Length: 367
Image (cartoon, rainbow, N blue to C red; front, side, top):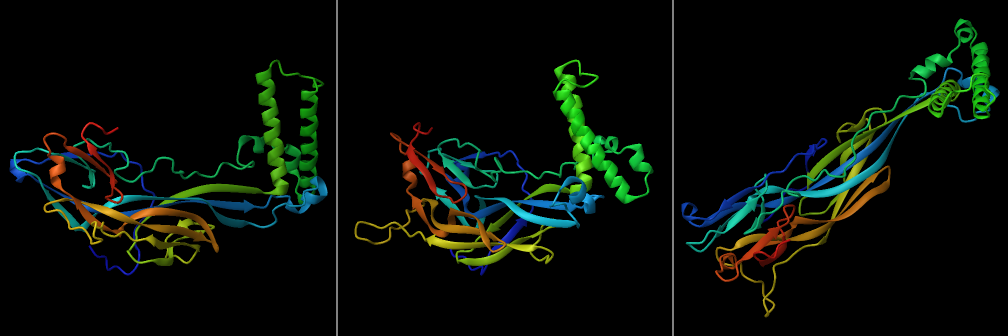
């Protein structure tokens, strides 16, 4: 099987939802003339990107932060930033329309094959678990919205005194806000030291009061220091590599405002992928060093090759992985007689991402 695509084909650039995988069993019999048809896979590479998008805003009193609270790093202008938090590289199989096969079994026998939901072979003469039959989303990060800042809660409204509200002078309001911060700190110290006039009746009540004091202090401090709201965005980009190497292909872009965007949207910095073949599989050899012949009517499987997948952002490599690829391999076959042997029939398990053999052993020995 040959692939002539010149570059990587980007099939999807969206989050892939987790879905239950189902399998189907097909049995060779008289109706099918004891033959079973199936497709071997192309290996797709799933690159899950977790981006961290932050928005910083100056506080109302940012020009007074150093004077009243000795804050030297207050935010003085709005800003947006983007960073890569994590990149996960995995693979799954997709049916190859150019690699469809028919395996022919001995008449009068009834071996069976288990197929994935996508129609890829998982096993022969044994029931394969559906896990791993499709896109694996277990353990992947999920998008998370930004948590409310210190100025976006009820405590922030409680922290603003009437005197601050009535004042028309920004400088005066800043002075009053700083005074209130020191009052709250003193109040907390009195409660913890047992010197408060109205001591909380129990530990739970004390915790509630201390939490409220802390929230008000944080809100008032944010009026000087500013706030930063950070959200995470997760997107899985699925590509099917060609059999040729690919260098620095733009996979997507990261925008400090919009998050993960399409590759052709120039509003963000590029996230690139390079795929380099490290091993190309060849047909097995006979004792004479000649390529073995495909068994007549045999069960086709893939001997995959290997490649290094490297993802880069901002001039740095952020993730690498060595993956097995069907596209870098070759197809060989198993004599179908091993599946119908009356004394010791064999059972086969395959990797749905590559079509490679996981195990071939007597029926009943599978774990």
